[in-house]
Length: 123
Image 1: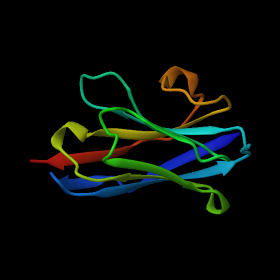
Image 2 (image 1 turned 60 degrees about the vertical axis):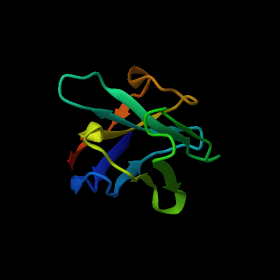
Image 3 (image 1 turned 135 degrees about the horizontal axis):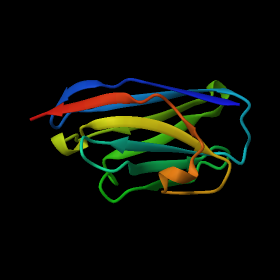
């Protein structure tokens, strides 16, 4: 029903920036909420940011607030995550996800997921 494909990951030096994209295809609805999650080796899947597809309301994890920006381009069905001031602790596989419900920071409440894109920050 909904397909998500992330891109833009790679290797970046500490203090640098990176922009992730998530192409959304299939049947989407205005009530959808889109989110970014990440998972580092040995760590639980962690909430990063979320945005309501129609309203544009955003929410960020404390660990990335002020450094990351989530946005969307509705006409192109694309979700973005602008990451600035990156540090090695940001190294993880980043996933985009979608849910029919409202804002959620819990990964298990998102039924649709992309394949993930690796972000590696070197010191």
